[in-house]
Length: 483
Image: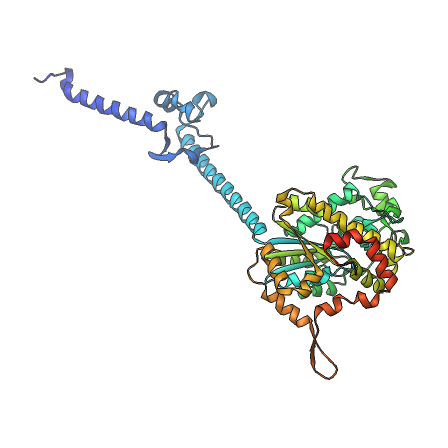
C-alpha cells in the first residue's frame, strides 16, 4: 500500500533517501578517525603533522563536531571570520608546507646519514711511538695499503698553534726542563684530542689552518698538497719575533704570552699576562681568520678531499703519550692504536748520531736519558695493560725488529688487526727499499736486520752495559735480550 504525502511525495522513497544520507554521514565520521579529506580525496594523517588546517566554521561545527578537535583541527572558535574561499586556500597551502617540511626533514636526515657513513667508511689508525724509534718507516709502510691517507706528525701543527707557531719538540712535551716527566695540562690535551678527532673525520673546516700548515715537515707527502704549500710559500715562515718562544725552550719554561689565548677553554678572553687582544698584538695577526686562511684554504680542501675518498686514515704520533691516545680512541669507536716499539739501544744509537742530549736536555748523559726513555715506554705499556678488555682489543703492540726479521708473519698480523685482506703492497714496498743500485749499476739488496743491529757496533761497550742496566725492566717487558 502506498502512502501519499501532501504535495504528492512518496513516503517510502523519502525514507530510502534519508537512510542513504545517514549511511553517508556515518562513513564520513568514521573516516575522520583514520584520515582527512581534501577536496573529497582522503589524505593520510602524516601529511598533516604540524600543519594548521582551517575549515569553514559552519561546516566544521555541524558536520565534524568534536571529532575535529581529536585530529588536530582548529575550530571556528579559534578564528572569528573564515570564508569558504580562504578555507580552501589555507588548507592547500598548509598541506603543501607540511609536505615540504616533511621532505626537508627527510633530506636532512639522509644527508646526516650519508655524512656519518662517509666517516665510518674508512678505518682510522693511530701510531704511537718514540723519536728515532722507526715510526716514520712504519707510517710509510702502512701508507702502502691501497687508498690510504697518511698524516705525518700533525701534532707539530697542533702544538704550533697552541704555542704561537713554534715547532715544539717531542721531549719538550713529555718532560720538564729538569728531566722529570711532565703532566700534560688539561687545556693542552683537550685541544690536541679535538684536532686529531677532526683530522680522522675529515673535518678540516673546523680546524685552524695552522694545524695542517706547520713550519716543520709537511703533514702530508702527497704531491698535490706539497705543491700547494710550496706554491703559496707556506709553512716555512715565522709569525712572531720572540726568542723566548723558540723551539729549544721547554714548555714549562715558556712565558705565558707564548700560549695562544684561542685554545684556552676557560677564561677564553684572558691570559695570565693580560687580555687576549694585548697578547696577540705581539704577533702578526697569528690567528687572523681572513688573511691567513685565504691563502691556505685550497691546501686544506685538498687534504679534506683526500680524507673523504680514502678507505684508511693513518696518523703517526711521537708527541703523544698513550694515555692521551686512549682518550681519543674512547671518543671515536672506529680508531685503532698501534703501539710501536723499538729496542731502546737502537733508539739511543740513532739519537746519539742525530740529536744533542739524546733528545732530552743538553746536559743529560746516555744513562739518564735511557732511564727516562724506558720509563716513558713502560708507562705507555702499563697504561694499555690497565685498560678494560674492549679497549685493549683495539690496541696492538708491534716491534720494529719483528717487521724486519719476520716480515710476512708481522705484516699478516698487522693486516688482520686492521681488517685488511691483502698486505702484498707492503711487502713489495719493503722489497724496493731494501735494494739499492751501487756505483757500478748493480742491484744490491740487504736485509733489514743488518741495519737493525747497528747499535752493537756503534755504541761503546760501557754504554751498552749501562743501558742494559737502566732499562732492564723495559727490555724484559718488551722481550729484548740483555746483550
